[in-house]
View 1 (tube, rainbow, N blue to C red):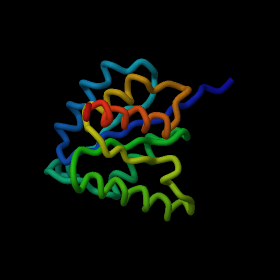
View 2 (view 1 turned 180 degrees about the vertical axis):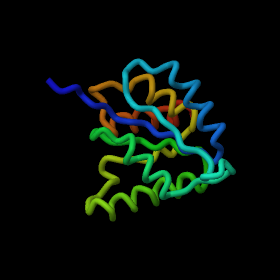
View 3 (view 1 turned 135 degrees about the vertical axis):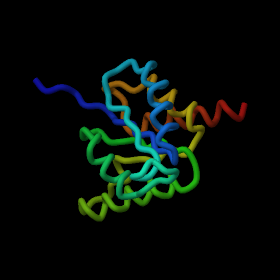
Length: 139
């Protein structure tokens, strides 16, 4: 009998410390055993993001059910999208089918997705959960 895999979630931040602290806080609210990881800063831990490093982290944590990338701001969103494009070119498929970039409230969206993630969730259903925080935010 094989174990059911789950959607992995990757926090991407310009700051290593922010990414690590965010995951440290949010992982306390996990209800299921899935991969919640982070990448932050450049290779020297200075502020920044790097599409190739994000791509490599996605490959490391993807268990087969996909990955949701939760970026903080600006170029982390662009580099997350670039990483997906790099994976598509590398694998010869459309990686955006199973890897999504969440572009909503950073902490609130992440928290909502982490709390509900389990073996029944998909990348798309978790994206809907995260986007629901945007709708509720505007109320």
